[in-house]
Amino acid sequence: MPDVPPAPTEDQVILHFEVRIKPDKREEFRGHIEKMTASSKTEPGCLFYRYHVADDAPDHYVVWEVWEDRGAFVTHVKQLAKLFGPPAPGANPPLPEKLADCFAELRVHELTAV
Image 1 (cartoon, one colour):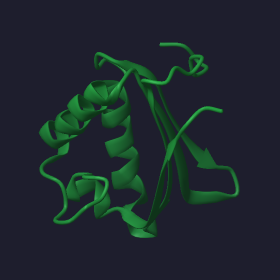
Image 2 (image 1 turned 180 degrees about the horizontal axis):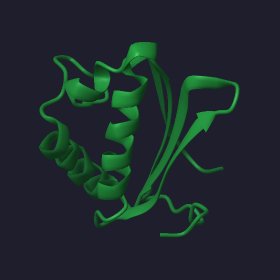
Image 3 (image 1 turned 90 degrees about the horizontal axis):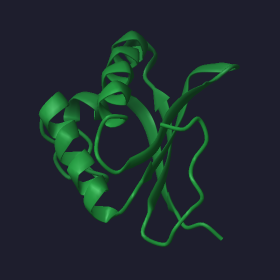
């Protein structure tokens, strides 16, 4: 997998997550993202998958994902459920409850290349 995102195409699903983690969940979340990243990078259709933590805010993470198409992204969501359990009730996006429980705040943006 490349260290930089690929040139965008119109079929790609590009997502940007900003997450603030509950301070008492920091270590648990770090374990989750290691497992999630290792799994996601091997999934068919994953073109780019990277987590970043803010140098000045250890509870603030940014995630950037690029999927080949909507089908690859849907398969990824199903894989997350296999790894971490079912989505939290009413979760949008449908993130597993085990992950969502770590979040103090979550913002998700689906992006379109311009």
